[in-house]
Length: 217
Image (cartoon, rainbow, N blue to C red; front, side, top):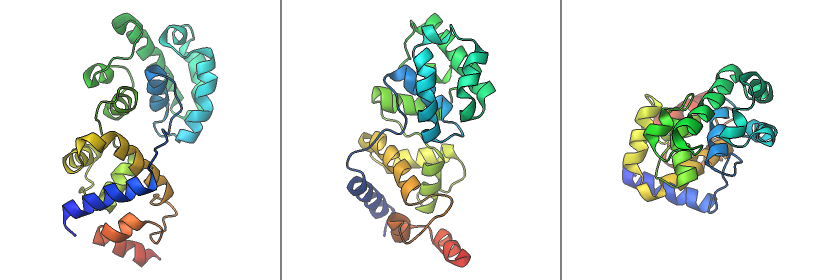
């Protein structure tokens, strides 16, 4: 199979498996999405979705968030891990949104990435899911699968994002990155991986990855 054929196979298989795509993080607007994505660093989406209702019951907008102390935020979000850094980030970005952006989440990568604790991946998720701007946020699932599928060299997430954007049509980025995340969780996880169920890797996977899988069996 040529690289283009592999890309087409990925797109078609994912479309078939996930015709409608659930959004992993519960939110109601750009601000609650931004906070939820920030909390999801090194934490499962399931856990984040358990914690955000508790936080948003007290503060679901920047004006109410800055009425809480960093310590109060930290107590609520503790189960998500990295709570000292994340609580400062949530408080700090809420302050900046009020001071610089009239309490609104800005609609540009540059302005988002200037906010405390907001990196490129978080900004990409917000731009694609809140504002519909084409983006390709690369999380650990996408990084792993793009390597397994021999569509990137796996050096780092920056390279993986570049390769994904080069290979896949821009008009499907926003759907596709979510489809890959769901596929990675369901069929191609890091632990407890069963290649027989992983139709994409089994069909187009990197030879060294498949050989290594069978060696370990």
